[in-house]
Image (cartoon, rainbow, N blue to C red; front, side, top):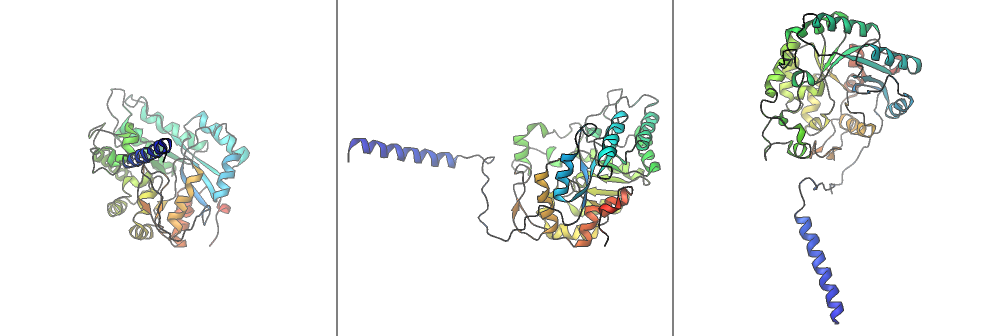
Length: 365
């Protein structure tokens, strides 16, 4: 064997060893192998029934060409999109003009409250009056962002608690106008927990460190959630939709207790489908028991992600992945919900809360 050939063989061996070493030193962030399990698959690109997405955000709806949204909606069988980012005042008017001139029965808009200047004597009255005006101009509900309880401060520099009595006129006005309040409070509890080997959201916090909070930043998680619950209980004549299942999709027994305690509270499933998909039998029981209180919602507008929701809700598939590893590194399973439950989750419960939606968009049983 020539020296040249020996040299090239040595290079190949060293390169192979280096590749093996790199593979052994691969980080957890990079480790994401496709499953070798071979099981039946039921890809579902279109929902079984027309559905209402109760939790969407379209920040440019006042001016955007809506035809692209309609094409994506039709492709997945979405009958109505609820845009929670309507703002207030002129923006609501402009959105409604765009909708009414183009697709008057396919979009619903929720208004938002401006929490600046809480603390001045006229704030409560002005906020309630503005909301009433926005509803008169076409808004069908109120969306409260998680910034209430996390970031908003009053004119004295104090954090505004969700159950601050100065906000009561707003919740009372919603009850008076018979419009629902979709409220997002806090974030997953793991964001407040120590970032160590026991934190199930470690990968998300590692790759997105701005989501990590200290135990008291700006208040303990339990305190913020308790504020929300006290506020909902204090306003039994107002209907609330708790976004993201109130961050209790990982504890459905507790969520069931809360639903029993607060008959005016519904829940949306946006951004927590992975929690449901890893407990299919228990989640199915929960959906059947509380079928009149659960609404379909996706949150972020990514059409390619909706089929995962359909697959979890409709199929009996086993062991399939979520689309974001940093949210869920586990596999999911289909709940195989009965048609009666699917209809309620997809559109009937939304019809109950927003009765002005065009009923011709939905099938008669």
